[in-house]
Image 1 (cartoon, rainbow, N blue to C red):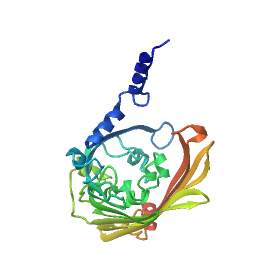
Image 2: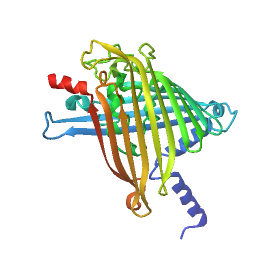
Image 3: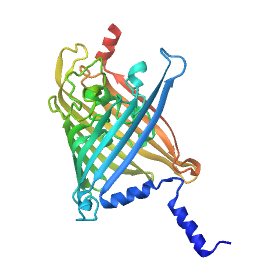
Image 4: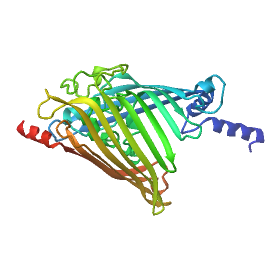
Length: 360
């Protein structure tokens, strides 16, 4: 039989050790956060391959580690215990390893993985963040990844494929794949919750995150190696403006969200029929639908999503429209944290691009 003191000692030891957090990292993060320092580390390790068949069997390793540091000056100086009372400063870096799989051997519009990029150790985001006390208004300024806040389907984040993150249309039609990971761009982002269940966000950014001199670069398809450290702040090509209206909805007792948005780019874009000739300006519109379809306490929650993008400027864009959709079953059969899903992505090449391919 254990004495009360011994039992208390065992209970205290159990509190200090956790299978989910064996090294006490979560406790250390909480202490640092109370002191005004937020630290987070994420790591992704993937292996993709064509083991048999296809034009060229291949196996590729992709690895990405992101370290994010957030400083809260109000807590650091002891002036306030309220989180973000004076705003926060954020800096993050990415270590990208391995070899991209989509450019070679697939040569695909649809990137295999959201982690896929040219291998570099680079600055990711450098930002000042501020929000009002009632959270009705917030702003970010600095070097930003706009793909985390615009054109996002929350349900689609369960999938690894690249099209379920930043869609295929902006990824293929904009400079350097647009202001999206890992190439963040100088930008200002505003978010306004102007009515119950309604939000509007708007961002203005440089449209050429790596400062590449050429839109098409055969030796560096993503142009990420034009700024391998991520420290270039370029303002010489054009402006990228993106806006989005969000509404939370409830249908048949289930919650969801509807989003509609647009982007405009003032930079010059080479024509599909003759890359030596450029036309200034580009645009696209998009819609994103996320909704709970079925909610059962025993079987889990079934969610669905649809995202559509379209541009009418087929003369300067490889992709004129893209669509991705899918369903995800979360917490199936009382297994919290598990999910099972099925999704697909489709991109429609522009008419002129299809003609060029046929001639070639």
